[in-house]
Amino acid sequence: MTMTSLAECPPTGDGTECPAEYALLPPSGGEIHYLWYYIQGSIMNGDVRRSLYNSWGFCERHAWIAIQVEASFRHCFMMGPAILYEDLLQLAAPAMAARGPLKNWLILNRLREKGPCLMCDMNLGPDSKGVARPEMVARGRDTSELHRLAAMSRSFWEQTVCGRCLGDDAWPRCRPHMLEDLLQGRVRDLDRHLSMIQRLKRHIVRYSRSFEWAHRGTATDEDRASLISAVGWFSGWQPFLSMVGMDHR
Ligand SMILES: [Zn+2]
Ligand SMILES: [Zn+2]
Image (cartoon, rainbow, N blue to C red; front, side):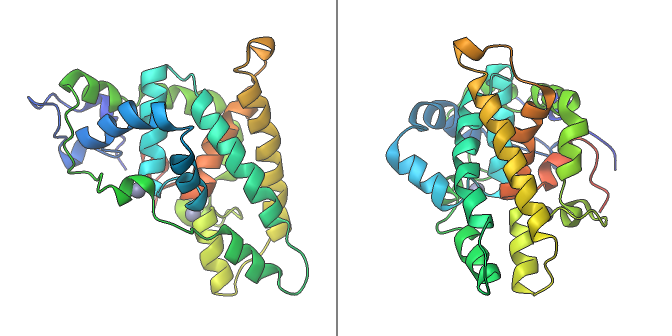
């Protein structure tokens, strides 16, 4: 498919409309406004945190929009998302490690969403306007920082891309497709998935620690890749694959 960056989206006057053909990850003014004014300030708020744990992050669309907006506004200083996904991986790894005859049922039960996506629940969709200034909307739609993060760590995250999201025969499954496969009794390689999750957990711990002063400069590309892999695993890869031109389905 033709790769079109949102950074190339032409100005539209009020800055809140982006023609569909330009928008592979089209965050709306309302979504950007929410992410900028609320998530960054309230990410440590107990209710927000609980909601993010209950739904394993955001839905596929909002998970990638949140990462893109954070990358753009913070120039890839991804401390907030790294901490969130470290927490989620710390919860998911033992859930994946279930053993015994009820193993598949336990994994299904533990890793399904227990609540709606926080942003969907607030009706923050592609048409939500918000009151973000046009320059803020333009900045929130700029994918160049996420492209930069993706490019420097590609050799590591691409090993973890879900074969069903990608439409090839790669063995990894994102969490939603793994649950689907489990439900249909066709799941395989659960131990391999557990190893992948444990490896991602080790690297995202290193990545979030690298934002502490005492550990500054210690993050490797594999550590950075673990954030992209974690977002893809928890929520699905489609918007990201479209953005980096790997959507072959
Ligand atoms: Zn959502
Ligand atoms: Zn998938």
